[in-house]
Length: 212
Image (cartoon, rainbow, N blue to C red; front, side):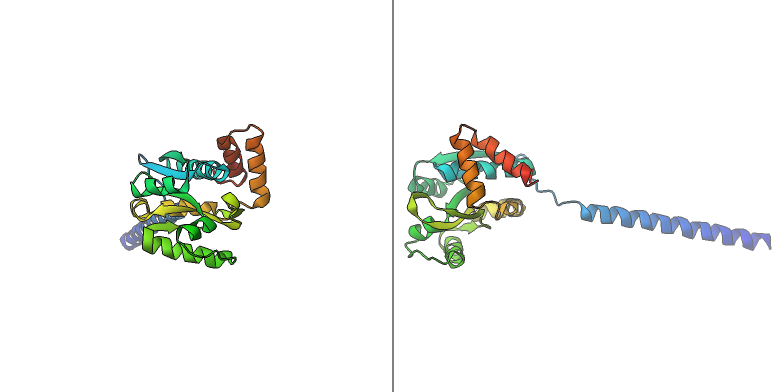
């Protein structure tokens, strides 16, 4: 009777080992699934373009720091003298991402201003993608536009090719959605006007929001 008992003990031990291995594998799988998907475009260079204004300087720096910190990508920022110059650079394939607001975009599209900010956003979002091959992401927030354009959504806008080549990028940038309001932005501008560098101001904001 000893042999069957030994076989039974061995069989139980084998089953136990197999179950332990299965549990280990399952734990590893769960752990890997819980890890954030790599937001990496490591080794790539992204080019941000914006009009040389308070909005352009602060928001382009915010975007550049966020992308660099989250993906490791090199990000170059170029500030342009005018909207026309910025869009010429986009057409010349010199810009991958630009900063735009809905009031300015409606003017560029030769569409009448729309006081309903959500409708204005949907209009420019659809028109830019269909007519210009540019994708509007979620707005940074509602801000007063440059040049007396009134309140509007200000948002990052990516070329279709940029979205295609960097599929994880929109998810990274969308973490900045609704990060700004008039109070927060006014403090940022005040800090810059007091002599603080835009990069420092933006980095402090991103750290306070635990985004970097």
